Image (cartoon, rainbow, N blue to C red; front, side, top):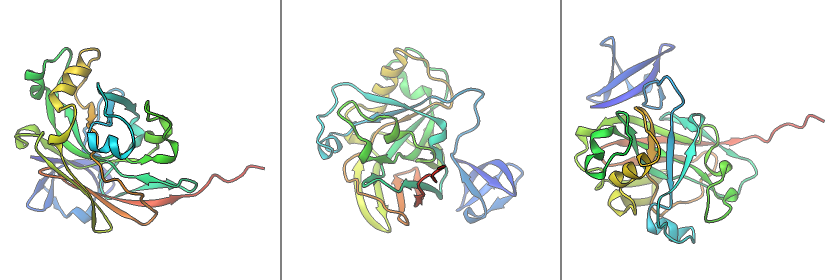
Length: 257
């Protein structure tokens, strides 16, 4: 099934995709255009752990002139970075290069600690699409990214759906594609990850506990281009759907003097 979280008539609601519409919990069917989309995650009674991978595709590492990682290059993200489908992401007025990153995202389904690769899929609730925008101006060195590259409010759209694990037989063979204003600018496949999903779950749970609702963003292939205010960016992954986001200009802070 494809799960969504939306706001309809001023209230947040869980929804399921049904024949090109959304089926709300009370049985109401609504059009995609009649709701405000939220990240497709149920609330959790704690801070959600969001892990993200840098340089997990060798071609993207070459694109950024970095060597491919020898072990997962991971960083943490705040929940405030998340935005929903069809929402807006602000581009700071003073930056020269801000690019999308289409990423398969794993949603943890149950408490995971010391999980082995062979058992990893049993701990997954499902998958969704992330567009993990990065601002190249703030990229410092191989040990990137620093906070400003990847932790800006609303700079990680997520969705539109959370797709059940059972409906994605092989997450390591999914085509990825990004379109900017309708033109294809990025194509890849999850089979080209350096560290696959089972490896990542074993690696992270070997030293930390992951809880239901936690996320792993698994990196992006090459093909990133600069995105400008007004650009409509569609990051799409086979079986998971197409996540739409529009770039708007972030005005500089007003002087207080």
